Image 1: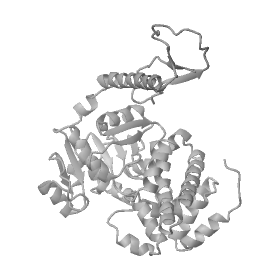
Image 2: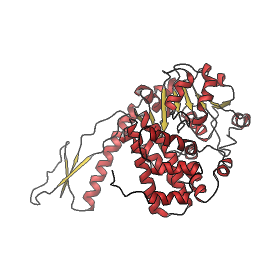
Image 3: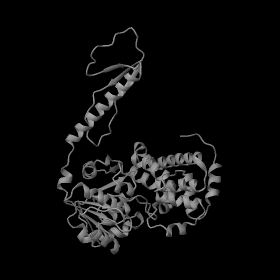
Image 4: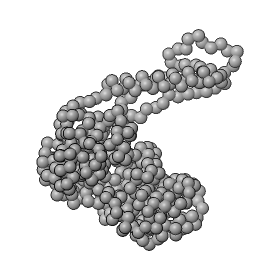
Length: 416
């Protein structure tokens, strides 16, 4: 057996996905002599033993590292260099984590957090901690909190929006007069507005009365706590304006945070909204102790439902299998740090929804989004049995146990 490792490696801009080296294996006559020196275009190596296989892997890895380093040496940093101030709207856990991350990118960068709680504001400015969400984590000294929207937004180069979806419209309308029409908004909020079924890309321009407000959505598998602990994380920024997406990539990418870019705003937003509802379903399965088989079946079905609706709305299927789709689903459905999964676990254990929500100090967006998701599914004529069951449980019209029974008794279908 002979294996061909096929270069050449081309240096691609960061916005394009890397295509790994291709291997072609075919039977070769034993008697045929191997070339003494492989040429630079095609490397022919025998696969007769572990030593040869290790050599193939080593060469592939070295080429990958060289490709990476060549791109890093040419990476642009001018966006970070010319950025003097950013503002984060909201003082929650994820907004705080993003503020801390960006602040560490440049010590002279002014990072303003617009918060509503005076106690949180004081703790950030005087003690360099967010007393409510990260009392044990010290924030960079260039993170400044304020309750004054005008002061926070004045002279900002970028704005990160971290206000929960259901409160975003009214909040943005209040501060609209202080927002520069050219200020890029980077949305960290995931969900759908309950009454209007709007995403953040529709909410922000409408509330600011500026249809041309530059917009980027940031999403992907990420817990605020792990960002604060500087653990390796990968996210995606999506915008219809590739130049703005690239600018946000340059602003945020670091040795512990990888930022991919996309033009599929719809796919990133819908996947981010629907995975929260699916996470509640996954938590219910855990709370009912239904086992791993049912968990895998439910999440697989939920991913299909997300794909059916999102593609009907114009999303790309590749987005739904990427970081903001499958990546976020895996994190939110299977890890105990997930707020939405926690809601589901407690529902499955028999607790009442009102008691669960009143005991939480953070918003589980999936609870409010569930009803909007079903309305959206009806609009696009998509059947979504798992996510519909979640909405019925949240509305107290179906028990978790009854929902499982009904789902298991759905007609047997051909998998598509």
